[in-house]
Length: 233
Image (tube, rainbow, N blue to C red; front, side, top):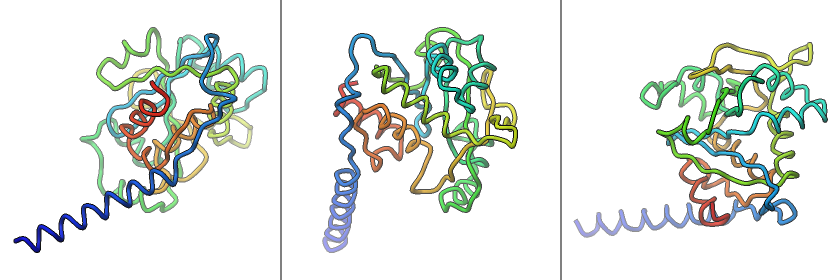
């Protein structure tokens, strides 16, 4: 019994060491020229349902930047959702994301295929939001984040680059989304165990100059903890 306990303890310590090393190794310092934001910054909201995170961004600010810079991906989306105050954007595996409205509906076969990176492709999920995001997502974990104007512009540019464009240089609509007024769009990049949906969110925050840690960002809890400890959100 003692030998089994010692073996379990050693294994747990080794796993803890590996996880800690991965977190330290992948930690990104952020960009002090972009973050923290001043009083004239722009708020975004991180929304988490426990296993997946999305970023809620103010539509008017997105539309202004997309129009000014002629963003072929974001501009048509901003126009389509123009009656809303905000849009929530999330990225994920094509098959899994489109067939999983809740954690309970997750199909393990599809999840395994996605994590193995078997080339399913990816999608963006865009949801129109009217009113205050914290009220709309009252049952979820939400974190309001203030970005600098330059950092926000970089986030919008990164979102724009995530849309896969059709031959007509338009974002390709794949069908209705999972909840509310929403749509799925074909996206750039493949999902895998080393590139999950929450890594995409961490990359957006990194583009805005916020310190992030990819090894901790596998789950939304890791992103939120990182934001709390390193950025005081």
